[in-house]
Length: 333
Image 1 (spheres, rainbow, N blue to C red):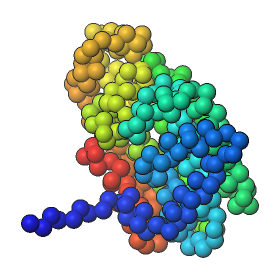
Image 2: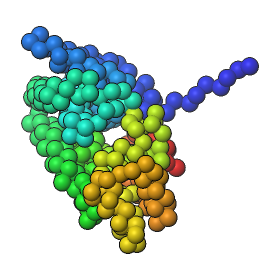
Image 3: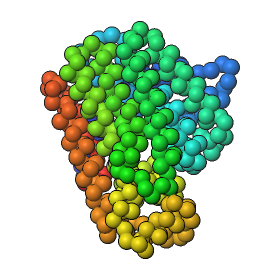
Image 4: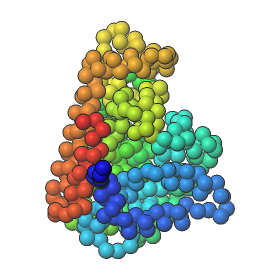
């Protein structure tokens, strides 16, 4: 009996189209995360970097550069810098969120300690800036350094909004545009800039990354209330237990009656959660349609990301990126 071969997904297609470049990026990452003075740095870094992540962000940098006709070496540096920034933010996030699982594995702060995670994250930020400087482009340095600042702003805004039932959808959008979309956008934009692409193509890829990142985060936040642990790389309901005001919660709270608001006040604002509360929260969300509304938003941003690529000339890479917008939200369709 012949078993039909599985069709590669868009990420795998991008990886296949950029195999040589990604091998060079991975080699540069391994070289630059090394430290003779502090062996714990490569140990902690490798725990995340080698954990089998999809490398979406560096792939976006490589794809943008290749699509814009770049033939130089520095897209490799930028892709590695983007991955270092991402890894640094994950290390810091897990400390802030007191997380115990990342990509289906124990977090670095659980295996080592919070101090190691914070300091290794700082080291990776420093290494990322060294890689940016080596490109000799002030413009890409400006793009990625600004993204690093925006990511931190998004995380701080999320922290201050946590457990606040008055959080609005507008505040939530600022949070996810900072903590997630900023690096998607900068990764795509930097690849176009290093290639010397015309302004309309640079802007198109910046907008593509922004919309893709928002769609990506909306999807993750939705799946926290109805996904599978293996697919999420974390425990289902983690956002609920941490009191995060994600869009499904914000919309449900806005539509809740007095008794339901008392429930949200107890479990989110006061953090007093009991067995069965996650399931009750899910039932309120279903009642008021907040899960469906979040799904609609995620799909709308995926469409916006796809349409943003229209100014770019047709190519296999562009087709893979267009397909990626659908793949990001495929788990919620």
